[in-house]
Image (cartoon, rainbow, N blue to C red; front, side, top):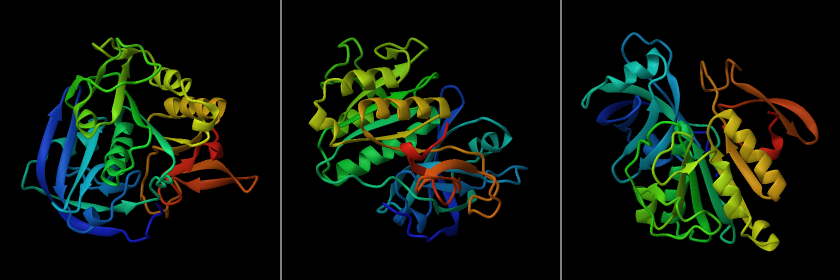
Length: 289
């Protein structure tokens, strides 16, 4: 779904601050305006508090129109996000968003594969939840990877995952409750998780699809660059449509500084595009890694 172009600057009250292992946090804030229009794949430019001058771009983990809240998941890398993790319920921060073009929603006939890695999990988890709300149940599966404990409640899955070894049976509780078959990967050796890269069980699942099924399947992915490159290669080899949400450092987040540009292929020509406003979602075939 394309960006509407409307970006709100608002003072958001911190509702809840959830702490997880390995310096991971989920911050929930009251943002009445942006919560009404935020889409999976878009992000907000968030004031961190403390002595941090520059804001940080954070992808939406969730957005609730009913509650007027938005959620962000992040890992405390650097002083900015460390400061953000220290704010308390009742504190106020400035939030600008939603920014950028989010994931384009698939046609009703398309099957969907979600792939997320680390702090790139939020956009694709958000996408999965929104697709379920829209009653998009065709072939919706998810694969998430992390090298630190997952910042979500996990459980053993009762949902089948064709092609994936039965011993890989740990999932995220939120996905299980929605009826989305999901499997986790990590090289840290966590119980019930695939020991290796997240693209490996995803590939095993894709191998069970027929050519006609593959032609009606799209991958949505977000994560570190090395993972996105592997996902793009997987999609190319398996001949699947694929959309990637990129992560980049940003100074202004509204296209003015051009500090987040990446090289893409458009109309058979190489062009430089700004991740903040031209992305962060691009077709995998466009991206040069």
